[in-house]
Image (cartoon, rainbow, N blue to C red; front, side, top):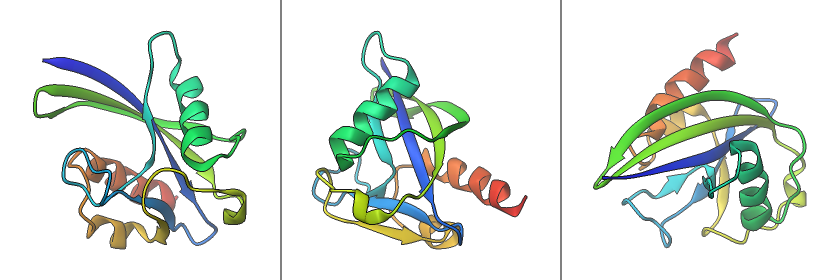
Length: 134
C-alpha cells in the first residue's frame, strides 16, 4: 500500500464560510468538491508544499496561515493519505486566479457537509465547526 501526505488550506471569511474548489472534472476519488492544496513532494515541509500548491492552483502567494491539525492516515483504495490542514482568513477573492478545478464557492460548514467530498474531509469539517464555535 502506498503512502502520501497532503497539505490543504481552509480559507474562511468573516461569516465563517469556507472556500471550496469544484473538482467535478478533476476528481480522483469521486468527489465533486474539495479543499485547495495537494501533495507534499519529497524534501518539502507541509508549509512549503502548501505555498507551492496555492501558487499553482490560485496563482496566489500565501503568506498568512496557521497550522490547524494533522489527520490520518485515511485509506483511499491502495493509498494511505495523511492530511496537514492549515487555516487562513480569506483574502480578497479577486486576488485569486483559479487555475485548477472548475470553480470555487463559499459555503457554511453545514452546507459543506452536504457536498460530495472525499471521506477524509468530513472529520475536518466536524473539527472546523467546533473551532468556529470558540
